[in-house]
Length: 99
Image (cartoon, rainbow, N blue to C red; front, side, top):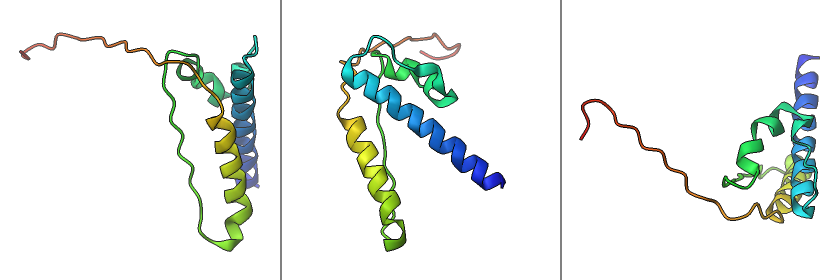
């Protein structure tokens, strides 16, 4: 029962992340960042001043082919989103003892 709840929570977060990517791709005036903890935490990274990189993990087994196909479709949707040009914001600190 615990594993099922965890799986459902992961799927909900990924679904919300997909909704965010769809809104960004369409240039929607409202992006639903607050629909899950995951998207809320990623808001700064996906809002235009950050650069996002996504890795897709696939399994080579036949039993996992449906899951791998779903992962590839999700990655394809994400790939269609252009967040804008990343800007560089470097802040330097003076660390005591360093030159």
